[in-house]
Length: 618
Image (cartoon, rainbow, N blue to C red; front, side, top):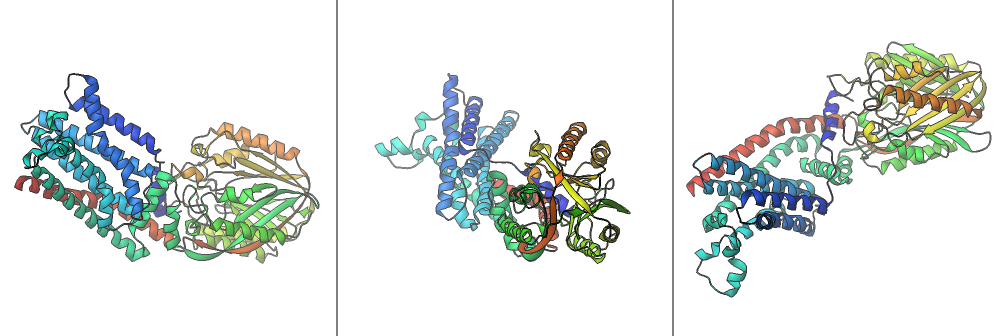
């Protein structure tokens, strides 16, 4: 992961799940009741509460129920949960403006008219915010989006019209008019300041704010159209859908910018002689991203579930350019793994494992028949992803020594988070890339003619008591111990996204049940739903993790038995983010975040100045 991609990943700090619509609505009514107590001055407290719920809460309730219905009738995608949350946010904004204006009025000579003018500006402000959200979520044009976006403001305006006695300015009489359009007697006296021209002011300010939103969207959309050929509203809509409701709309956006790629899928299967599968290592050269369960974020679980034995899905040598664009692409990867399984030639012979160190690179490998099972780490130095090209080159270097199929996993087990300009991405042409290739070549040369001995394997697994918030995914911790010629080699796989600096080394030195040990992570992005890093060891005490892994290693050693194993590879044609597209997306999104705030502030300031001039002229 590059620094720019790290900045994009940090957007996950905004991830949340929208509450159910009834929860948002209940909270909105509570806010309305509290506002009524603070604003209205009646003899009885319950009357203040009721007036607050009625005059503040009714527009929110109307917006909550009607916005999603109207939007969907126009071909939009706004759900009731999002609609209610949006209405609640807008209500809180209006109440905050009223409170602020009330404080200013109490400390200055502006009086009640100033508070009401601020109220009108707040109603126009929520129209503008709702317009932006509806345009992003439902991809409507500005005129169509204005219809559902205006519901909360329009509902408040109707309430004002009916209960402020505005009808008294018109020469219209009758029982129906009195019953439905003129109910001044049932309203608090604070609403008596409303006159017909105020509604014209509200309309004018809404037009100004709506134009400002349109100009803002057009401005920030231009670099997206130029660099990626898509609209920023597609990204915003998908991102809002993902963070609010956990929908797959973001995948549609990624699919638009993705490109086809052919990736190797390598499988190492271990079975009892002629019998059931005991363990399966599956390594598709895909990155499990971009975040949460979007795209290939939950790839390790899907791959592990397909194994008949205990599934081990370590991290491949691939970066964010090889994120799958949709979860559907995982099926293609799984199919390729099944085809590889059918081509495996099993053997009961393997070599002792060797560790080859070359600069920062440290490679643990052993031959299974004529194939190579290996994993690379750079600990104690910091590292994140090994690029696709570096992994392919390293595997080719290993095969040049005489071995056939190569399973080369990135242990992904030492990183210092998302800080700094260099996040440890192992790229082509870097010193680490050559060190990785040289280590793989030496391992292939060493093991191709190394003596083979009977292979015995044992496995153990614990889901652990920890959750994704603790940095551990649903696969927990898995251990496979390979015994060859009285040497025990332990492959420990933690379902997490990288590890805190130094933790891997403390675990390797602390585990005494095996002769050679490597601790790997799957790089699952399920643990990044809420935090951009959330590495193994951030939330879990080292001692507890060491105790758990030591116990599992002991259990795996007790489980060793004669087995057959083999490795085979197949290729899968999938749609991934693509070369340079991830970096382009990251840089464009980061530019939008950094510049969008200033542009939004400038646009808001201009719109407010224009609205103030409208107030003064009126």
